[in-house]
Length: 96
Image (cartoon, rainbow, N blue to C red; front, side, top):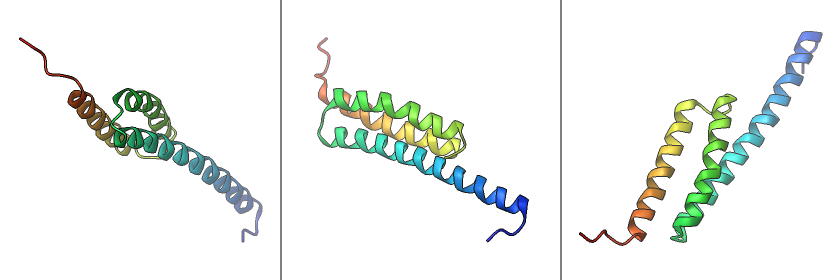
């Protein structure tokens, strides 16, 4: 355990940051899971709505430094691709 004043303060700060980061990661994981569940249900409207909520949560976690910006970008890209594929599959082909 920390024994001098600055080490005690540092330990306290680290614990507070850890709690904030865990909360942000949980929010991101839940948002991603909602998108994946909607994809599994083959529900394009639900998936798009969930993706619209997931993107800001992921971006905020990256902006705050909880997750790496490239990790956030990769998550958003992969989820967007999956939702776009589901939407394209559900729509009838255009008649020409």
